[in-house]
Image (cartoon, rainbow, N blue to C red; front, side, top):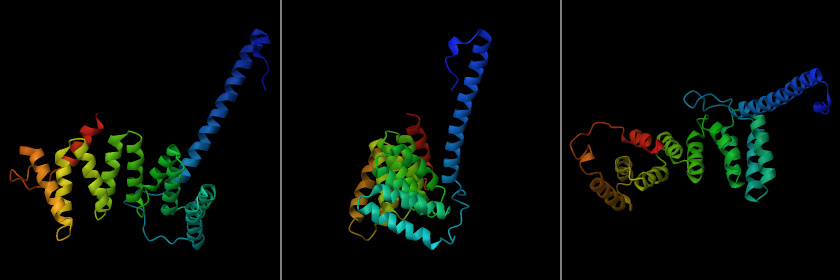
Length: 240
């Protein structure tokens, strides 16, 4: 478009160089603007604590979600992605559609896009816990343990009745020798499983973790007040 700058007179080369740089900057600004617009559309929801859970969803959005799920089950990922994306376009409050897109991107091994979409989905209270859990697994698989721990802890905090996540987080802590936060989780799980066939298993885990924690266990020392070992353990893990 600007021709061979080296063949211009000196003054022309200066003006040509300025013009070329101006065009390149304009193109770059255009790409950045498009990226910002795309991400802003994914992240228009309010924070979790403020987003309403009772919003009315258009029937067309649910139909598109169902259609996308059928396509995905049949392995037609492109059609599924198109249906989920259209559901988001029709209903900007559809956290379920964002979560579906994020999960689909994981299945398609598009991890960068999956993380962007799942991050947007964490802002929707109806799916925030699931989005944090999905992002935790994605980040763990990519070797980002500190961020993964934080995500899974958020998921467990938002949906404590999902004992499978709590167990998984406990195993992650134990694998990193973070005995105290693991002990805290398994103590809660032993209460959850009381009277079930897994009560004995949870009791054995608690006893093993008490031995590993030794004198650091505040309950064994008679300090039953609330304590934040999980946060401190996460800080240590994240710094490594």
